[in-house]
Length: 179
Image (cartoon, rainbow, N blue to C red):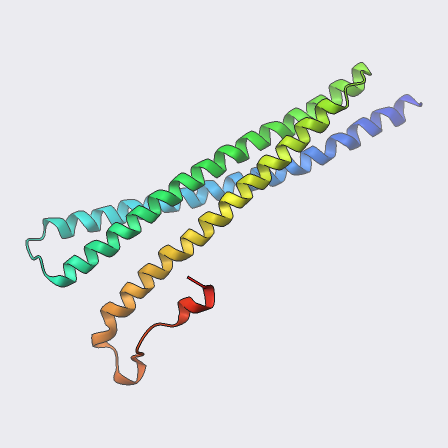
Protein backbone atom coordinates (compact mmCIF):
# COMPACT_ATOMS: atom_id res chain seq x y z
CA UNK A 1 0.00 0.00 0.00
CA UNK A 2 1.15 3.52 -0.75
CA UNK A 3 2.63 5.22 2.37
CA UNK A 4 0.57 8.37 1.77
CA UNK A 5 -2.67 6.37 1.51
CA UNK A 6 -1.73 4.47 4.63
CA UNK A 7 -1.06 7.69 6.55
CA UNK A 8 -4.34 9.21 5.37
CA UNK A 9 -6.18 6.05 6.43
CA UNK A 10 -4.63 6.27 9.89
CA UNK A 11 -5.52 9.95 10.24
CA UNK A 12 -9.08 9.44 9.02
CA UNK A 13 -9.63 6.59 11.47
CA UNK A 14 -8.37 8.85 14.28
CA UNK A 15 -10.99 11.50 13.42
CA UNK A 16 -13.97 9.49 14.71
CA UNK A 17 -12.71 9.44 18.31
CA UNK A 18 -11.92 13.15 17.96
CA UNK A 19 -15.59 13.88 17.20
CA UNK A 20 -16.61 11.84 20.24
CA UNK A 21 -14.03 13.75 22.29
CA UNK A 22 -15.69 16.99 21.19
CA UNK A 23 -19.15 15.66 22.13
CA UNK A 24 -17.92 14.48 25.54
CA UNK A 25 -16.21 17.81 26.18
CA UNK A 26 -19.39 19.68 25.34
CA UNK A 27 -21.38 17.52 27.76
CA UNK A 28 -18.74 18.04 30.46
CA UNK A 29 -19.04 21.80 30.01
CA UNK A 30 -22.85 21.90 30.21
CA UNK A 31 -22.95 19.43 33.10
CA UNK A 32 -20.41 21.54 34.98
CA UNK A 33 -22.58 24.62 34.45
CA UNK A 34 -25.66 22.74 35.67
CA UNK A 35 -23.78 21.64 38.77
CA UNK A 36 -22.69 25.22 39.45
CA UNK A 37 -26.28 26.45 39.19
CA UNK A 38 -27.53 23.70 41.52
CA UNK A 39 -24.87 24.54 44.10
CA UNK A 40 -25.73 28.22 43.90
CA UNK A 41 -29.41 27.39 44.35
CA UNK A 42 -28.63 25.14 47.34
CA UNK A 43 -26.79 28.00 49.01
CA UNK A 44 -29.76 30.34 48.52
CA UNK A 45 -32.25 27.76 49.79
CA UNK A 46 -30.01 27.05 52.80
CA UNK A 47 -29.85 30.76 53.65
CA UNK A 48 -33.64 31.03 53.41
CA UNK A 49 -34.07 27.90 55.53
CA UNK A 50 -31.73 29.25 58.22
CA UNK A 51 -33.50 32.63 58.18
CA UNK A 52 -36.85 30.91 58.81
CA UNK A 53 -35.32 28.74 61.54
CA UNK A 54 -34.12 31.84 63.41
CA UNK A 55 -37.58 33.39 63.23
CA UNK A 56 -39.40 32.74 66.53
CA UNK A 57 -42.78 32.71 64.78
CA UNK A 58 -43.73 29.05 64.47
CA UNK A 59 -46.80 29.75 62.36
CA UNK A 60 -48.23 27.29 59.88
CA UNK A 61 -46.98 29.38 56.93
CA UNK A 62 -43.41 29.05 58.18
CA UNK A 63 -43.88 25.34 58.81
CA UNK A 64 -45.11 24.81 55.25
CA UNK A 65 -42.22 26.89 53.90
CA UNK A 66 -39.75 24.91 56.02
CA UNK A 67 -41.10 21.65 54.59
CA UNK A 68 -40.88 22.82 50.99
CA UNK A 69 -37.38 24.21 51.52
CA UNK A 70 -36.26 20.94 53.10
CA UNK A 71 -37.72 19.00 50.15
CA UNK A 72 -35.95 21.31 47.71
CA UNK A 73 -32.66 20.90 49.58
CA UNK A 74 -32.98 17.12 49.62
CA UNK A 75 -33.76 16.93 45.90
CA UNK A 76 -31.00 19.40 45.07
CA UNK A 77 -28.50 17.29 47.01
CA UNK A 78 -29.57 14.29 44.93
CA UNK A 79 -29.15 16.37 41.77
CA UNK A 80 -25.60 17.27 42.84
CA UNK A 81 -24.76 13.59 43.32
CA UNK A 82 -26.19 12.67 39.92
CA UNK A 83 -24.39 15.51 38.15
CA UNK A 84 -21.10 14.64 39.85
CA UNK A 85 -21.50 10.99 38.86
CA UNK A 86 -22.34 11.96 35.27
CA UNK A 87 -19.30 14.22 35.10
CA UNK A 88 -17.09 11.41 36.36
CA UNK A 89 -18.35 9.08 33.62
CA UNK A 90 -17.99 11.85 31.03
CA UNK A 91 -14.37 12.48 32.03
CA UNK A 92 -13.58 8.77 31.88
CA UNK A 93 -15.25 8.45 28.47
CA UNK A 94 -13.29 11.48 27.30
CA UNK A 95 -10.09 9.73 28.40
CA UNK A 96 -11.18 6.53 26.64
CA UNK A 97 -11.73 8.39 23.36
CA UNK A 98 -8.31 10.05 23.62
CA UNK A 99 -6.77 6.64 24.38
CA UNK A 100 -8.64 5.21 21.37
CA UNK A 101 -7.19 7.84 19.09
CA UNK A 102 -3.68 7.30 20.42
CA UNK A 103 -4.07 3.50 20.22
CA UNK A 104 -5.19 3.74 16.58
CA UNK A 105 -2.06 5.71 15.76
CA UNK A 106 0.30 3.42 17.67
CA UNK A 107 -1.21 0.16 16.37
CA UNK A 108 -1.13 1.49 12.80
CA UNK A 109 2.45 2.80 12.96
CA UNK A 110 3.90 -0.26 14.66
CA UNK A 111 1.84 -2.43 12.31
CA UNK A 112 0.72 -4.83 15.02
CA UNK A 113 -2.31 -7.09 14.81
CA UNK A 114 -3.88 -5.51 17.89
CA UNK A 115 -6.90 -3.76 16.38
CA UNK A 116 -9.00 -5.02 19.30
CA UNK A 117 -7.28 -2.51 21.64
CA UNK A 118 -8.56 0.70 20.01
CA UNK A 119 -11.89 -1.00 19.29
CA UNK A 120 -12.29 -2.00 22.94
CA UNK A 121 -11.28 1.45 24.18
CA UNK A 122 -13.73 3.12 21.78
CA UNK A 123 -16.57 0.81 22.82
CA UNK A 124 -15.85 1.37 26.50
CA UNK A 125 -15.87 5.14 25.93
CA UNK A 126 -19.18 4.89 24.05
CA UNK A 127 -20.75 2.83 26.85
CA UNK A 128 -19.62 5.36 29.46
CA UNK A 129 -20.97 8.19 27.32
CA UNK A 130 -24.30 6.38 27.13
CA UNK A 131 -24.38 5.78 30.91
CA UNK A 132 -23.62 9.43 31.62
CA UNK A 133 -26.40 10.47 29.22
CA UNK A 134 -28.83 8.19 31.07
CA UNK A 135 -27.79 9.75 34.40
CA UNK A 136 -28.35 13.22 32.92
CA UNK A 137 -31.84 12.19 31.83
CA UNK A 138 -32.65 11.10 35.40
CA UNK A 139 -31.24 14.39 36.70
CA UNK A 140 -33.36 16.34 34.21
CA UNK A 141 -36.50 14.63 35.47
CA UNK A 142 -35.49 15.42 39.04
CA UNK A 143 -34.93 19.05 38.00
CA UNK A 144 -38.47 19.19 36.68
CA UNK A 145 -39.73 17.74 39.96
CA UNK A 146 -37.91 20.47 41.92
CA UNK A 147 -39.38 23.16 39.68
CA UNK A 148 -42.84 21.61 40.01
CA UNK A 149 -42.58 21.62 43.82
CA UNK A 150 -41.56 25.27 43.82
CA UNK A 151 -44.30 26.32 41.41
CA UNK A 152 -46.94 24.42 43.39
CA UNK A 153 -45.80 26.13 46.58
CA UNK A 154 -45.95 29.58 44.99
CA UNK A 155 -49.39 28.89 43.50
CA UNK A 156 -50.76 27.64 46.82
CA UNK A 157 -49.17 30.53 48.74
CA UNK A 158 -50.57 33.16 46.42
CA UNK A 159 -54.04 31.63 46.05
CA UNK A 160 -55.47 33.87 48.79
CA UNK A 161 -54.34 37.02 47.02
CA UNK A 162 -55.22 36.05 43.46
CA UNK A 163 -58.28 37.54 41.71
CA UNK A 164 -61.31 35.28 42.00
CA UNK A 165 -61.57 34.46 38.26
CA UNK A 166 -57.98 33.10 38.23
CA UNK A 167 -58.24 30.79 41.20
CA UNK A 168 -58.48 27.14 40.20
CA UNK A 169 -59.41 24.32 42.48
CA UNK A 170 -56.20 22.37 41.87
CA UNK A 171 -53.20 22.81 39.63
CA UNK A 172 -53.41 20.43 36.66
CA UNK A 173 -50.19 21.24 34.85
CA UNK A 174 -48.28 18.34 36.49
CA UNK A 175 -50.55 15.81 34.76
CA UNK A 176 -49.07 16.77 31.43
CA UNK A 177 -45.69 15.53 32.61
CA UNK A 178 -46.92 12.56 34.66
CA UNK A 179 -45.43 13.65 37.96
